[in-house]
Amino acid sequence: MQNLGTWFCDKKKMFSLFKKLGFQKHGNISASGGGRFQLLKTLEGHRDWCTFVSYNAEGDLIVSSSTDRTLRVWNAESGECIKTLRGHTNKVNSAVFSSDGRFIVSASSDKTVRVWNVASREEEYKIDTSLADVCNMAVFSPDSRFIAAACHDHTIKIYDTETKACINELKGHEDVVNSCFFNSDGSLIVSASSDKTVRVWDTKTMRCINVLKGHSGYVWSAVFACNDRYIVSGSTDRHIKVWDYKSGECIKIFKGHKGWVRFASASADFSLIISTSLDNTIKIWNTESSECIQTLEDSKDWVYAACFSPDGRHIASASRDRVINIYALK
Image (tube, rainbow, N blue to C red; front, top):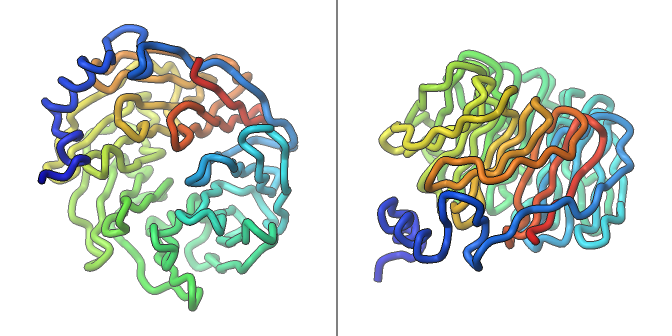
């Protein structure tokens, strides 16, 4: 039997299914027949810019990072701050849960990557990245055996979580690497760079298998989508692009932001794309039509990051106005 995820992400079948389920070109956000995201609550506590936000796999916890040098772990339902994680000595650029939810990895301009134990709410260990200069993002591999770190020295460093040693460097970018993410089985890494390219790397050979060119500005983010079939990228050229990374073809372009796009990613079912921008907005796009179907304008300053909850019914955003906004599908 053909794999369901592969079938769903076949372009013609996928778009045909969207129409049957009610994903129309205007208005409808959910397959159940409509709805819009509305501001549910605002999480306050950070004393400076919020730089990143992510959910754990269960969707009951949120972690945020900030230029106030801290991370905060929040109860997603109540909005209560469960713990403030301190230890970094400079701004924290990203914070992401491990797949099993046991750990959080953070990247900082203090030239360290730190791993935090969610249960004990304490720092587990830190990795010195001073040889690579500042680290913009760090993420776990799906099995938590490795950490990939996007660095200012134009490389992605791969660290062994058991030995804490740097076991490889992915070289090829010609400018700062702004983000990096594993695919769902850990066989690939995608990286975004200020050299205006996205690169895809094979983690077995540690070699670049494709370079995606087409953005005319710095690429701030690139993530896998649609069961790893596509890549979604966001750039200072104000565009979001969807790529078939195997062919290198850009298959969709989303235009509408009036400022740099800081982050973009897709919902789990690939029906929606969310993007954040220095125009102070979050936009939600219909993947099939490439149309913006909703603009969230509650932030008072640049929006650095946003993500869907695992069930797709909530959005969490991080912005320069020091808050985390939570939106719910109504």
